[in-house]
Image (cartoon, rainbow, N blue to C red; front, side, top):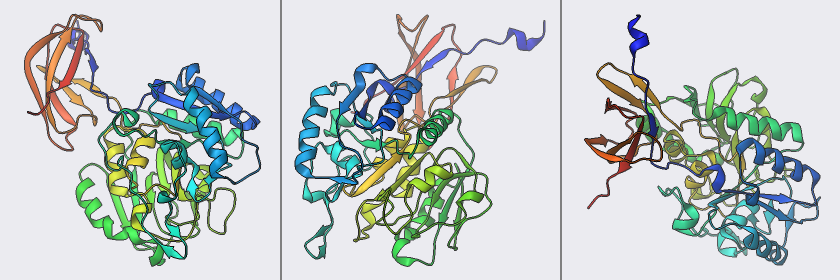
Length: 402
């Protein structure tokens, strides 16, 4: 018999929770908007989201923003319908995208309108409140921080929404080998993130192809995984190939005005093939903290977080920023277990730095026993050795630091 036919089948591996799951996502649908209803139902079924997580509101259509009192009434209905286990929300519309000076995604995330999240007060630009979810390792934001980060599945028609959702789902666990393009453009007011780029390249150079380019636009690339730039309008999008799960934004204070404004809407990124984007719903005030930190975003995304989590954790002052895309896209989720002869070779981005106890069992339901093995993971490590055991299920359990 051929030796490969005698190879031991790999066990099922249960990893520590690394991201928000479909059963933890609430989907908010506007029953006044037929497109919202259609998007919500398609998304719920496509992602296997429980029907109890569908949250109904009624918002008259055709408006770009709503007032604080109207939002407060809507939020009462949302809170009453939200199951306790829901950790985040997905909206299913383009308009409205503002609650006065706040983005609608941040208003739903925090469950309120508050001017502390707005940067322009009177005639002055003032730093807004900072969110404690910023750069947080939490995978249970509602439980740990009292916030349900929110992202809108924003599209102008169902075909665009379906394509966006399908891209996000197709990206899961694919471990893409694309490129991060970081553009230092001539628009210095909108390229304030460029100071972060060299450090980002140093940190991620071993894990991802990164190009820092001194130019205004990008053309004719078919491997775009990340694209961060600073321009009022971005040329060449129709010449680019975005990989499933790709994230792109252009740091302006008007990109979040999804259906209005004199700057390019963040919707153009999704229409070009990106799976997530971001924009501010209100000018002016270009504080660095109002916009995504590419290094933080990439770090969480490459560790298996969802697009929603990675984007939200990268923005220190999210009050005026709207997050759009497919919330649960997770290209670096999951694992690979390869036969390396006398041991298993585990490839996964989901294990943070620390020590893990190995448990094993004959089935998912147990009984589990602790093995005489401790896995030690360093920051950024993605390849590990696991012993071969005559057991069908392995579980890695974090060992709490004393």
